[in-house]
Image 1 (cartoon, rainbow, N blue to C red):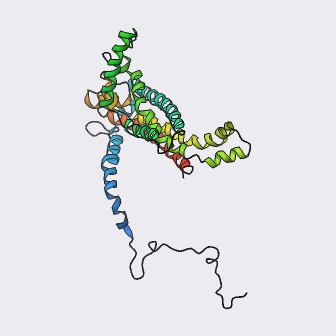
Image 2: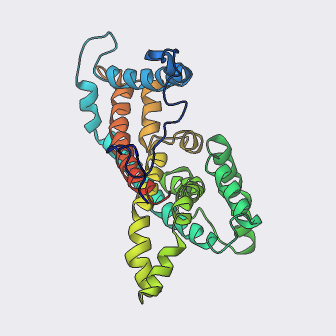
Image 3: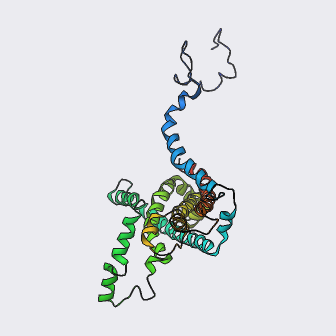
Length: 314
């Protein structure tokens, strides 16, 4: 049947009819609001970023290039190559790398074990809640907990010495040095990996496993050709996040290590509260500059990997 006088379809009318949302364009007779008014809601957050992030960062970067009386100098930056500072950076890299690798592997295994539990079950909810709390548990409280448990006079130390004749400090007070930081940092690194990596595992679709089985694939081919390539960016991104978290941690190390400055954050504390080399009064700013460079590189890599991972989690 032919319809007479049918209106001709234009190129924009072909296919499905698109409709604009009533809020996407201004109502007739009402001017469309433009300009800076629509960004007023971001003002409190912008104020917070500028006051507590941007200004301290600028001060930390710029003060390293000036003497105490305001004259330009590069002596502070040259001090970054002093043996003690290089050792502190090396220890910071060691602590961050070891705790990031171990924490990411253990955390990923915990996430894999949780896949066999119910999503809304009591076990997974409990572990997720504990991970969220323990990932933020640090500073003086965490240091005190380890000193009370594993210190030279700690409960576990005394129990092992009395019941099993095991001396945890036969080779010295390891808890108050770099080896102790490795153990203490893992306490919050593993929970952080759990809450970071779990969404990526949950993003694995069952249809992918079904398609693999339909095409004759095995469990091995599923993990090596589908799951691992999809999870790799998220895993590496979580590893970088753990590295940055450990590299910038200060309060726990400051409360645990009372003598010396084995890592960079403690070096900055020493430069601020103790006597410095003549001409390097702003050495803390140079140390902060070195940390900022490392953190920018690490977090840039993390953001790139997260952007690649996000498409698999939709």
